[in-house]
Each structure stands twice: as C-alpha cells, then as structure tokens.
Image 1 (cartoon, helix red, strand yellow):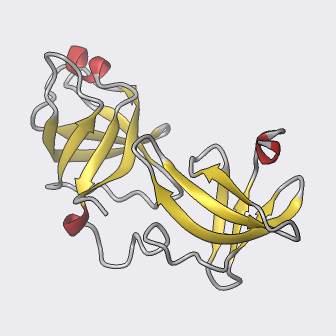
Image 2 (cartoon, helix red, strand yellow):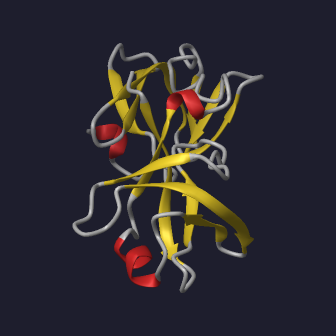
Length: 172
C-alpha cells in the first residue's frame, strides 16, 4: 500500500488564473480540501508536478480547484487529464476502507447481467485498481477495472457493489 492515493482527476481547465475542474475517482467521495498538498501524474514537462490547494469553488461542471503552483490558463491546460494524488495520511480515517480490502464477500451486481459473483479483493495495479470477483457457480474469477464508468455505487448495509459493465468484459 503506497503513501500516495489517487483521489481525483482534472477534467477541464476553467479559469484564466489556473483553475481546474476536478472530479473524484474510483467511487470515492470528493476528498480534496483547501490546504491539502497534491501531486499531479503523469508528470508533464515544464509544468509543476505538485501544488497546495489554495482555493476551491463550486461550479456547474464540478469543483474548480486552484493550486499555489498553477497560476495561469496555459499551465492548467497542460494538466488536463492528469490524476491528483494525495498523501494517504492526509485523508479522513476510514475513507479508503473499501479500497483497502474491506469489500470481501460483497455481492457484485451488474445492471444488465444481475449477480456476477462475490468480491474477493481490490488489486492495486500501477495503471488502475482492479476488483477481483469470484464468478457465481463457475469457480473462476474476473477482474473489473475500478473506474467511474463501470462503478455505479456501493451499498455497505446490504454488502453490494453495483456495476454497469460494457458488453464482453465478463467474457475476457
């Protein structure tokens, strides 16, 4: 388990003074806060790789985040699509509980296929996290990328993870 965690990504440059629209990733709540130190990955040439959040504003497209090291629109444009990492120690206690393996035994339910199987673990890979699911009745496992496009929600009370998978993913 690394010291840094991917919690958001930049979706749009929004302001001439370097504001960036940020959205949370992997089914996490929005975790960025003023004063939080962040790293931007992958690194971009001639652009800051880190910054401290100095201001945040709600916007129709999400939350516009301003960093002390991103002060103009050109720098913000260069960071579009980058992920935002924060120190695990800077996050509220328990917020990453599901990411850290607290999902064993949760039912994984697809919007089209219904019950897929039972969650075994979340495998932390360099490019993304993968939800490992023991397939119902087959004894096989399937890996599902933990991305916003596939994850619809988690019901901790009923121990269910709801996904909407693209056609063919379960056949891989």
